[in-house]
Image 1 (tube, rainbow, N blue to C red):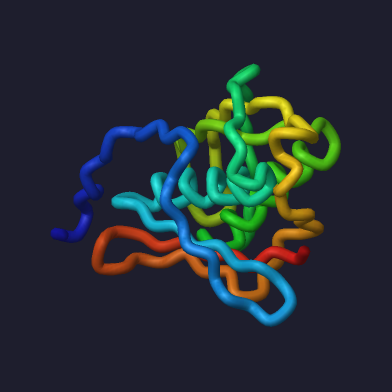
Image 2 (image 1 turned 60 degrees about the horizontal axis):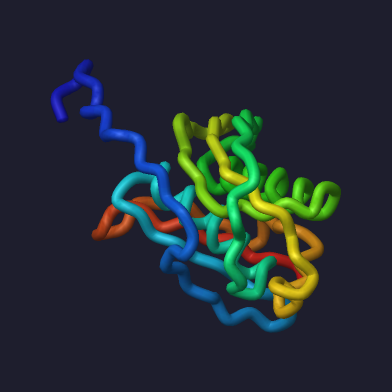
Length: 156
């Protein structure tokens, strides 16, 4: 791309559960990876992968919408960790699970999302993982041949 010209702005994509993701083999923890055509899409899929893990794959009925602004770290991987920590905090304190996600802005140090949340159901979501923390260990967020790939390791 010629110097001084901005990359073309791609349309914002709103994703909903279920979404494809990979579980990453790890000795004592669990890892998640997601891909997207854009960095925003990869982060949306990563948020929904965490929701799928927390819910045990049970359906999550939408109950409300929330705009989230999250301050991240020095790069996209640290920003993704900060976003997932916010989602995990909402789950731990409010028993809310994401059921849709739209990343409206993403940069190193900042993300803005619109997230549809549903209520945790102890019967429907009984098979969900007990995630304790989102770690920086193994966190990656980088371009790949198909677009972008985001990865995190979770303490369980």
